Length: 220
Ligand code: SAH
Image (cartoon, rainbow, N blue to C red; front, side, top):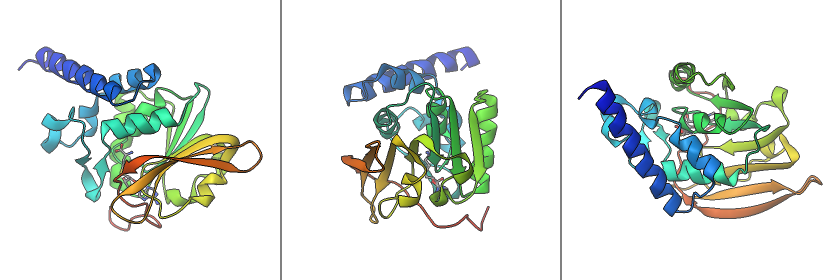
């Protein structure tokens, strides 16, 4: 297949995926357009290329996963992002969710505990010319105190309980979305600041994420 033909097929498959997400409730046009502009095949390992446009999570290096597109859409929509927003993302992984966020916000700060994953994600951000993404190798459970407070925070690994340290780095009227729970199935929770230091929390659905682990990874 020629490069041009390959491009047409991936465009078509991406358009189909976007339609499927819309029918499942990801209806925000800005979110759908951000997903449409993000070539998922660039974030998926060679071995799983064929499945880049399936609506499923797929394995990446270091025993981690690239999130399911529907969940990426749902989480992004739940964040209610304004164009001027500064967002903190915990768990860069492949960088796919980061890239989607970067199309919607002014700045995206992203933290990953595996050097290998972070390095690969940085290469992708460069290739896609996503100049509003700022990366950090570290323990995302600690947030990013020097850059706080954030308008929005997205956690893409499951926190065992309410992430108090991260909530403390959110603006008073900010929004944090995170999978919460200790088991293989967690609750996706949206915390919305009430402007007075408190939060209103809402459970969106059940999800399956890899756990948010303490500290940075010793292995590469
Ligand atoms: N958003 C990613 C999904 C990655 S899976 C994507 O679209 O590809 C979750 C990621 O969170 C993994 O890469 C894992 O290494 C990372 N992670 C887990 N605990 C972490 C922590 N304490 N700090 C930073 N990253 C963490």
